[in-house]
Length: 179
Image 1 (cartoon, rainbow, N blue to C red):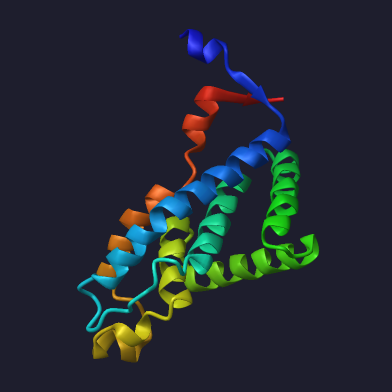
Image 2: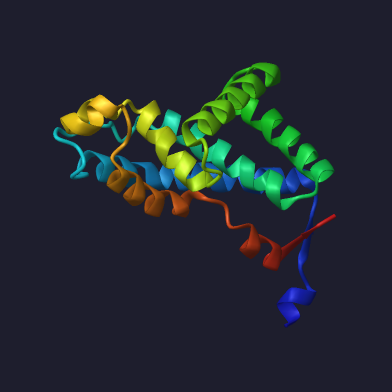
């Protein structure tokens, strides 16, 4: 009870920092295992042999997926402010101009929306994006390879993994409140 009364107040800048640090931490600590799970998945005739250091696409997919939850969690003005701060900070990390970084993220959002259509389930969209960004079609059995579509059993297993890379806003708001 006392914990809910004494929540720590955070600025938009602090929220952006916590968001970025948490995303990078989960990607840095989790991609090796994700790569291993993909490489060993029975949906593939041959192993895709994804390098456990090849986390670039994965990191961007996790960022974009979580940004969609950010937009659904905050009111429009606050979401825009926090997103702008996230883009400003991430553009420096990626050594890009903020405009170029924003364009890249918008392209990823468009790509994820396209591969996820007609579904609105972002976890599913993240799983499908991994399939396409890591060019996994070529490793599937002939039936799914010809269809140029991911094996649904692989997607189901990836969904179970990707849930672990989605920011838990409910837990965040139990601990913090925003200025």
